[in-house]
Amino acid sequence: MILLFLAFFSLFLQTTLGNNVFPDDFLFGVSTSAYQIEGGWNANGKGESIWDVFSHNNPDKIIDNSTGDVAADSYHQFREDLANLIYLGVHFYRFSISWPRVLPTGFINHVNPDGVKYYSDIIDQLLSNKIEPMVTMYNWDLPAMLQELGGWTNPNIGSYFVDYADFLFSKFSHKVKYWITFNEPGEICETGYGLGLNAPGINMSGIADYLCGKTVLLSHSKVYRLYKSKYNNGKLGISISTPWYEPKNKNVKADVKAAERAMQMEFGWWAHPIFSRHGDYPDIMKDRIKNLSLANNFTGTRLPYFSKDEIKRIRGSADFLGLNHYTTYLGYIKSMLKAMQESQVNVKGYAVWSLMDNWEWIDGFTLKFGLYQIDYDDCARIRKPKSSVNFYRDLIHVMEIPAICFEGAPVIPKIEHI
Image (cartoon, rainbow, N blue to C red; front, side):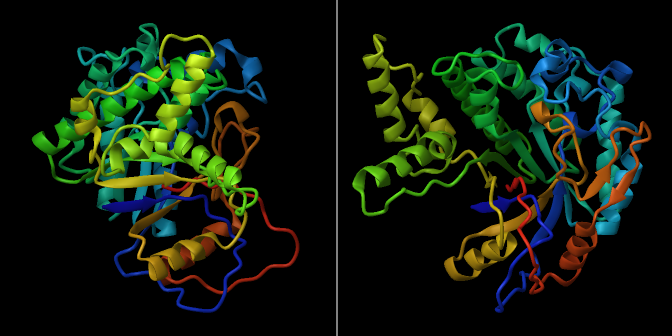
C-alpha cells in the first residue's frame, strides 16, 4: 500500500538533530486545484460548475464577495507556473482537471476539444521537463447541469462520473501514472450537502450528506475497478482529509471513547470502507447514526447501508491513501520523516499546498497559502516568490531537512497533505 502525503509547507520549522535525510526515491511536489487557480470560467466552451453558480448567485456566502472567475489566471498563464515548477525542482505536480472544462454538460456526448487540449498541453509540458503529472479527477467542481439532477445525492451521478473518468483515462492514461478520484469526500458531502457552506449549498445534515457519501464511495470503487481492468498502467487512489482527535483526559474512559468516535465518524467514514480488512462503514458510525435516527423518530437509520456486493467492491479499491490534514502548527516534515524511520510508515511523497496564492473557496482571496504570492488587486496576476520558495527548493535538491530554529511566535498555517 502506497501512502502519499501532501501538506502545506511552512518555512518556519523546528527540528532536532538526527537523521534528516529522505530516501532517494522519495517524491516532493506541489498541489493546486482547477477552480482555485485556473480562471477562464466560461472560456472556449467550458461549462458551468456548481462553484460558478454558487459564487455568482451567493456573493454573500464568500467572505470577500469574490469569485473564481479569473482566480490566478492559470488558464492563460500556465507557462509561467511551469517555469516556477522547474525552478523549484519538484518531482511531481498534483493538479485537478475541471470536469465541465472537458465535458461542459457533464455528459460524455458533449466533449470540449479546447479543454482537452489545455490539459494535454499541461501534461506534455510537465513530462518534457521531467515533472510527473498527478491528476485529481474531482476537486469539487461538479458540472452544474448534473446538480440539477440532485448532484452526488443521486446515485446515477456515479455512472456519469465513471464515463468522465473513462474519458480521461482514454486520453491521458498512457502519460499519467498517478490518479486521484476524489479530493476530500468529507468536504464534498458534509460541507456541500450537509451544512450548505460550500457549493452546491444544500443544508440537509444527516440526510443529504450520507446519500452523497454512498454515491461518492461507490463511484470511486467503480472507477478503480475500471482502471484496473481496462488500463492498469499506473496507481490510483483517493485523498481524504481529517483532523486528529485526542481525548481530553486519557484516563477517563468516556473521553477516550469520544476521541475514537470522532475519528471514526470523520476519517473512518471514508477510510474504513476502502482500507480496512472487513470494509463497510465503521461499526461506531453505523451504531451511532442508527441510535440517533431512532431517537429522532425515524423508522430506521439515516445512513444508507451498502449491500454485501458493494462492500466487497469498495474494499481494497485504492493503490494509495492520500491524507489531507489541517491546523498543525510546527516540526511537520520532520515528524513525517520520523514516522517513516521509526514506525516504518510507508510515505512515498509530500507536496506543498499550494504552488501559489489561490481562491480559497468561501474564504475567497483572504487566505494566502502559496509558495508564490499573487497580488489579486493587479489584473496581471504576477507571481512573486516568497521566502519559502528557496527553502523548499533547497530541501528538494539535498533531500535533507536542515536544522532551523526561529525566534518569536510560529506561523499558523493551513496544512493539506495527501
